[in-house]
Image (cartoon, rainbow, N blue to C red; front, top):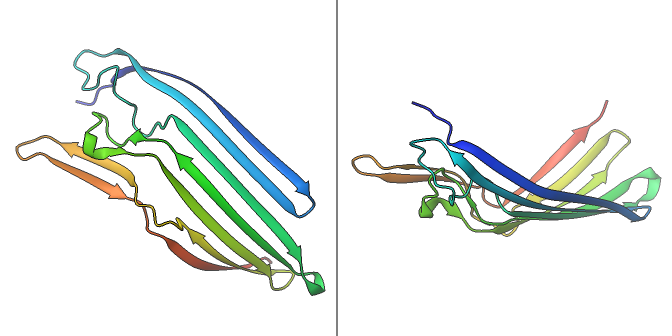
Length: 165
């Protein structure tokens, strides 16, 4: 039987700012606050009003910047980076302690060079600090009981060639 836990109350705020203080410089910032709680639980619900909602961090924050440098022959080089943060959150309905994720920050960077009017090459890095964080989790309390978690991708480096026609 699949049943709803009851009602959830959510409130919060989010602000996003974008600025171009110079022609070739872009800055972005985002901040989010979320207050999410269970209310009016259904009879037999496996959660309590004190349990955290799944994937509902209280705080999120991000900042990003990119700067474009003009090169000869109408080409350009764009350098960029970003940082994002999530506060702690539950990965599973009953808030199994082994599946609670502590807050973490992620870092990324890239460089894009225009090789022609229709061809760009980008070198990039994601999760540069090689942060290991849970992306999902399941707890099973049957005969043996087990806890299974999926984790993030490790640090990634890559190249992308883009052709526009």
